[in-house]
Image 1 (cartoon, rainbow, N blue to C red):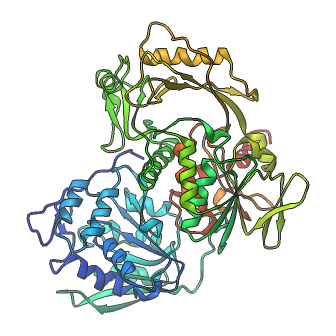
Image 2 (cartoon, rainbow, N blue to C red; image 1 turned 60 degrees about the vertical axis):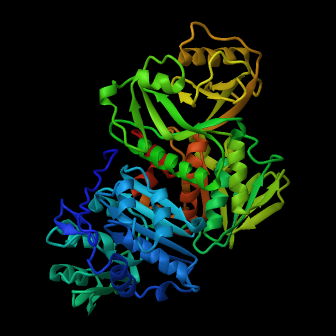
Length: 620
């Protein structure tokens, strides 16, 4: 997969009908984009009536274009007093608009308030899924940027309505053929409806062959007819057991761990209507691994844009969006030195990451740097404790602090949490284990695969150089705003010593000196903090369900899961970056809402992957 997607070139010469020269077609009818959306896509799918009384309603669209169908659907949801609790609108787009073109397209639109919010949240044009939240999380746009034929295979969701809205079949045949429609049908359930302005006969035949009842309805403007359909298959294909909701219908959850992961899970679940209780053995939130005074968040880049880079990118963008929503003060912008690639081999994406020469990076950092650097405008540094507390406050979760959980016991209606004395501390249909290394006893055999790593960071009260923005390379440096900085951090596997060490401080200050280009490391009083990271062998988190009893499956997607229990842990040194996305993913996996990641990335963070790899090792 490539990092960037090719943006659309839009011809605005006809204000009534913007066009796509690459396809020789217009984006919408000259009779009006919103009237077309309301007649064809809302009316053709029986909306708003069909979402009334529902907890969640999912729309899946081919071809986001200018976003008018989304805006019309959002507006209809807003205007309906009997609307569903949550509207999730999923759309794929091969050539998304640049932000400035999106603003131009809606400059004279009929829904300026909604269009402004969409433009403000418009993501960098990077490949993959982007989650844009509105209405306090009650409206969600899951926007897939890239080729629809690849993205539709990777989506994990069940749609209630399908909007078929590519360019004309003769101009854009790959969005209308049987192969693509079969990919869409995989996301349908009995009763799913579909609508499109097209009456293309091969398309209608393909829908009918896939189990849709296909009909014609009065069309919009100069089109006398349009196509409507309803999914009513004779035989239902079996859905992969590993993709089923882990706690469908749960209205209450207990989350063990009041750090970054637990707070993010509480926030995401609360937005799905789940009442959350967060339990922690310590006396206050963010006292363990999430208790450092400052930490970095940013994406990563690698040449093949593999799973680590894609997951980190999705996570960093989710963090950036959540921090903006919460209004949390933080240091914005981050430099990461690049020591392997030459500048001409570094390819950035506007709004996500920019490649800087050593001279340009030096100017930003206020120091003499010897390497080029990646500049992440949406990255930065923040107090993880403040972030944790803000998420907990926004979630409305009940906190039970100073409460240890020593064991779990499966019950008929969920899980019981047992204290050190064996008594039941709490019980719920959904339990999320979202702590760090202190929860290893609750993880069973999985704990054997994980590494507990000690890390010491150091504080220098009077620094000879404070970076003007956070900087990372061999180590990192974060200004404290008072003339000092935090720098670090060490990595010692299996070391549980909580004491600050002079040798570790010397290592941290030596790394800081190399970052700053100083001739020698500064001296300072021993000061800092020790924490522990929980790390999986592949350095990706563990987010998902545990394998159910019985013979193990040879594919993660086919592995049944223990009902009502989800892990969200092993955040390594990336807790700030990963928390927001991990919380969303935990909620989606538990409740069965559309997953915010592609299927291959779900597998990349699935806790069961570790056991599957053990079984596949030679000699076993």
